[in-house]
Length: 252
Image (cartoon, rainbow, N blue to C red; front, side):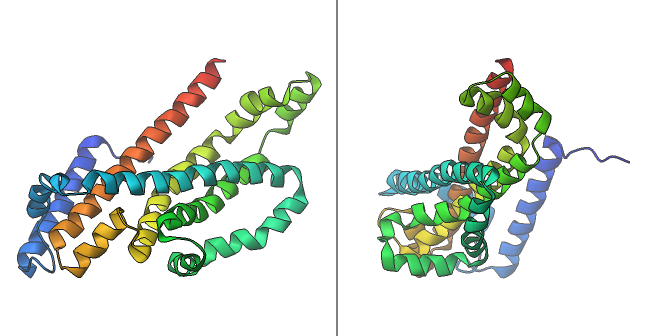
């Protein structure tokens, strides 16, 4: 029997269940240092935006992490296109991408701190994490393309740009959508982790680090919730724009 996807009412109930468990755990522990309740976090969220550097911290982390994502997206698609056309490029890139995928983020952060300033660390780390995801998905999509469609484009002597827009991109849609949906969340996780280790001034990562140092669990969980909100909003807006692009292409 085919299962139906979880609807909004079901998701809402799941969220309420999770918040209830959180509340019960906080009441059981009964220590604001170890765990604050979701009610306390919600109350703090109504005032934390008034603290100095709140909006600048969000903007700092956003444009650094988003910048790393977009650079990796562009380069990943380009490298996948080259690897799909020239097998030697895929072979040449293989050890680098395997290394990026297997080495822990913390190791990359520590190594990169030797070469880069803490301010630019989250850009590079987000880039490193996103690149193999985009490259691998797009390359897989190129390998599974319908050869007949490619031959039709060649027979009708379609310009390269029209081939990309009306033959390659439509066939890459599920692969590109999947890559972006996965990579967006990973970019934020890795980028904020890099900021916590590098602690650049004016970043969300530094706010989290200070909250931990001063045992300010309220702010620690508040900033965590804010990261989730900003990450989800960025993902939704980007995926909405990507879907709009495909709708426009389908309409010609």
